[in-house]
Length: 385
Ligand code: NDP
Ligand code: MG
Image (cartoon, helix red, strand yellow):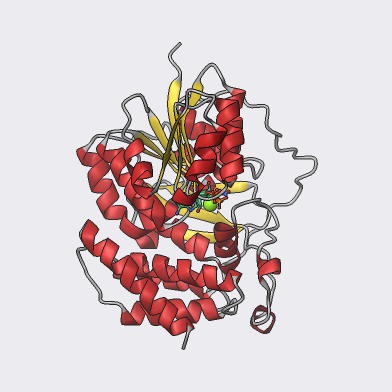
């Protein structure tokens, strides 16, 4: 049997390491062809020695000498820099690219992978937030698929299996509500990064953990759903479901609602993207209904969690507005993690950045690059007062 050759962009992260666990579960089906990281060179070295990929790339060029020297005894190609990372996805033997790097940096390699007609397993939601229309057009032109890895979108995708184009009435995205679900506005004023980094149900990278606490993550997922499933914003509903057992739902024209349930474990959606349209055996923990006795639902509160409202607004205004929100949010999250801004201050900065950056209704790729840079400058200047 020919093994699927997978390029993992961001193999040292939360999604990347779980993807390697999936590959370990199915060594007869999958091979890690390329592994990449940004800074964590020692982790990348250990992964390379274990999984023996064809090539590794470290985005931070200053780490190249260490990587090269540590892998000198192995027949693994070693590259460094952003450009190498963008180019390597086009290597001929690569069948699938898992975009598991964080933030706007995922956009260019994803575009290159689509141009090279690779199937995309998309974890890097920021790519669709920033440039969903452009990505969809490119995927259509190059006849390549974008398979969701984000658990909510994987759930929707699983609910759509076998529906052969039956019209969707509504996509219902579930949200855990994060660590501050029950906090009052007063309490939110003083929350710390340590509190925000402590997610009740999921172990994830720092950036998405803060986005989950602020509900920007859910806002981004609404935008992601629009581009993945071709639904209008008013067809996408968010419901808070603190147990994170129902991963999301689809309501069809006849009123039927399908849901996908399971443990909160990203290895399942990662594996489904790898094996689609098949399902494979997995040894991961099962949902136990003797322990999970209560499933509850609440409405999201966009007054306390303004980021969710800002993301919806960006989706309605469309054009480069979601790109502006993404850039401002990346600046804000970094600032919050460095204690330069308060938790609620993040929404203020994002809102001001949305007002100040030039709006473009039909952006090109170059417009997105310019918008991202401008929005970062504006957000920084707002933070610095
Ligand atoms: P992590 O922070 O854990 O990992 C990010 C990975 O990307 C690391 O390998 C990191 O390298 C690499 N990386 C970071 N910045 C750059 C850069 N500028 N250039 C190249 N590589 C870079 O993030 P997660 O795994 O949590 O998230 C990855 C993506 O998946 C995000 O877009 C997130 O929204 C999405 N996602 C994550 C989920 C989760 O459960 N974690 C769930 C759903 C979606 P290094 O280790 O060297 O820093
Ligand atoms: Mg998600």
